[in-house]
Length: 307
Image 1 (spheres, rainbow, N blue to C red):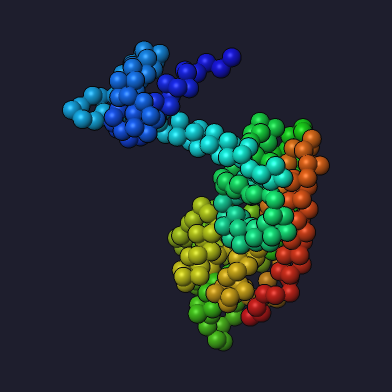
Image 2: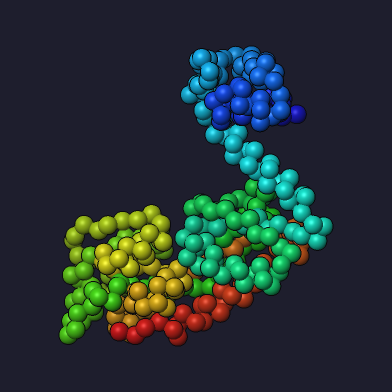
């Protein structure tokens, strides 16, 4: 038995705190203001503290009530989404997907329409987060794609989405004719992508070049680091997969291709629960993602501009 107050009381509190008015909450919930007031009072007795400061025509949530409202709002959103999914057509399915933010924004998002066109009865519900999820505990997520590493758990299946080339990328206007790539990179601003699998220290060491002792702008999301490079801030060391659009449009070019040894890493990892891998919606998405990721990995080595 969960130790939580009556849902009716929480619903009345959420409406009153969000609207900062018992009267407006009563209109939304089709109750009287007196009923809202009584339900809030009962909840305050449950917690043993006041949740509102009463004023003339409005109520102001206390700091504790504000924190409770923020959490309840997220919970109610999840409940609403779950109820909407149950109400879908019988043949419809919802696939709950959790991804690393930059992977979702830069690579997966632009391709999801291909999946939905091929599987019109599967609706994608996408959330993002930097940390990999333990799907043996987070049951509301069907499939996860993590960056950098994946949790190894009994009851979970995990596979890498291929090896990605990690490249020094910059805007083409930063190039200077007659200057070698080695000379150029020593004088350009280096952009740190904080979560990258390969650091500038790794890259300069692998190429036998001394790492410049200069301040470096730093970003905690690959998408932001790539955008900074497009804007001409400097050179970013990032995955060709995440920068595929910018490379294809000529907004970024690989600095010193063929001159520097290729660095590849397994960077993104697909996970699902072992006992659900044969569920039709999970199987359909995994098969599609592995197929398109394989095509992408093959194309990366043939479509990048040569400097």
